[in-house]
Image (cartoon, rainbow, N blue to C red):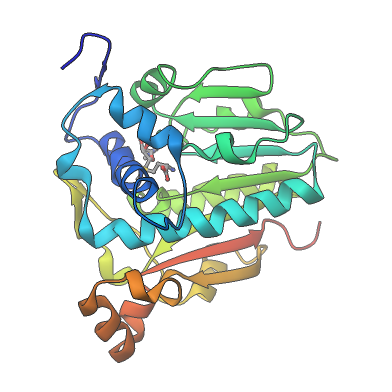
Length: 269
Ligand SMILES: C[S@@+](CC[C@H](N)C(=O)[O-])C[C@H]1O[C@@H](n2cnc3c(N)ncnc32)[C@H](O)[C@@H]1O
């Protein structure tokens, strides 16, 4: 390995290492013929890292990683077009590269993750007066003070590939804090089917939360309102494994394994 490559000082048994699970497919897809998404930054990161990422390129999550990037890029762009001076809060940012694709040079963007992840992120991304890094667990709710949301500000929270790692009690607390303290905000998040709870994603890290029906999110907090739900299995079917295509036809559980929800945080605001 070249000396210029960056080391990864992240415990491979920690949840932080899951950041490679969405990053690797994005780099691979970019180099494919007729890619669904183009993510040159992901390619650059993986070319400059001194770490064996092969175990994190998982066939079973490739399609979901690419499709959710495609959907979320479009939704985030639309929100930014409608609210050019917005604040975007990227919870559990990992080495997500969306800011490189959607920045309008006006918005303010906050990347929040554990200190070991933010330390790695600093090797590839610059913090500026508009793009801020917050090295905290998202259950340390002082990050909401750091973001300093004003009442009239438009805010979009993104939680991509994050909430599946929390117990339901934490999920309730997270949504309660968001609804109470950023009531004018909207959230876009990926959600797994309950069926995947207990399944291992990387060595030592299992999924702990999911929803059977998308509407069940309102049992977590009924002040929220669902704006839209996407089912990942509905997209790019020709790129899904044969097994997934067949199983999706047979059971709604498989159809709903990966979804994206867009919510208004407080319906009365
Ligand atoms: C599967 S990765 C997704 C990364 C990124 N959102 C993306 O889609 O590329 C999950 C990320 O959530 C972060 N994470 C998990 N639990 C967290 C917590 N309590 N506080 C902050 N970040 C957390 C991990 O460190 C990791 O970077």
